[in-house]
Image 1 (cartoon, each protein chain N blue to C red):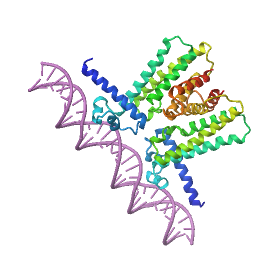
Image 2: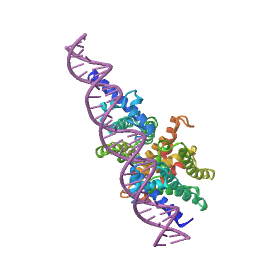
Image 3: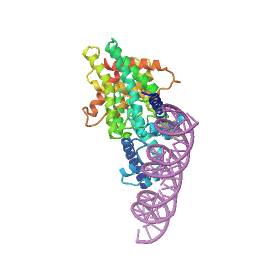
Image 4: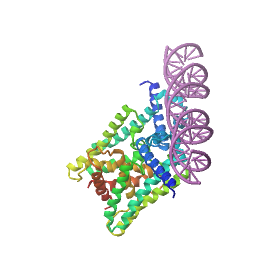
Length: 194
Length: 194
DNA sequence: TCTTTTTTTGAATTACAAGTCAAATTCCTA
DNA sequence: TAGGAATTTGACTTGTAATTCAAAAAAAGA
């Protein structure tokens, strides 16, 4: 990759970060291309040099953030952890992303309302992959006798749903710090699996 | 109330129901006044005869649905139930609203992104009132020794968050029926409080 | 430095949806 | 059933934001 390509790649990522930020703050529909550009001291015309349109921009944001999250959670499988511990850490990682990126599932609770046909498919697929890491941990835990639950998928939905909601109320100025919230959530949500 | 006023009141409510439906389906920003009117075989001009603007329409939807939900849940206090049972039923009622009205908290995860100053205040206040019914049940349960939990507010957030997320995945054509989901959720979320 | 390629700009275009309003229609009541 | 009040209409105005694009500016290479 040439210097130029690297620069362009870095710029693309900067744009994605900025877009995530503005979209998280204002919501997808309220975040204008101008807002996103302004955040980086650019003009909106430039954005179209890097991304086909607003939808693609959002799609790439989603992809970037989910990929990062997946990588981190998949890393847990290389450590030697009990299923409980693995799940606790996975929940904490998920919360970390939810709080810091204010995105992941939340901005796009309903992909159908935003994306076009093809992207919906891809987004749902990616989400499935993400969610299935949690399923895998649950399966392992059930197989190993650490967890005891009948409706595994629903349990996973409860855990991720509860975690996603944090985004709605959490504020760094609030009573609880980020780490505390992560700890308390992980502990209590784990109870669902026992 | 004269016949005319009654008719107008009924019409207003019909509009609110239609609006809830369309907004739940398309999202607030994608639901146009024309869509909402079309659902009732009206034209959008008429909507403005009944409601000042789109924001007011949304606000009233929110109010209507939350009020119905609150009434139902508050009704539980007149029955002689254990705290566990009360909480289980409250969760089921909440889920019923989430599934049938596809609304309550969800359409408006972030009121700040939609409402103007004054309405934000009112919406948040109403939500607080709603949430505090759950807090009351938790408090009672803790006082009576049925529940054992340190972070009460956070526990409530987990429960409502998990429940709200149902809206994202539930489909009547899916594997589980509405009643089953309600039962399973209520049982498992209760574990958080034990 | 000069030329070429990449990147940025900002003005123009386009589309869409909120909100307005005078006129038409429907409904009530005397 | 005529007249006035309530309701509905649909064409119009207005504002906003996505997208395009030719031209300008910046960067790279020779």
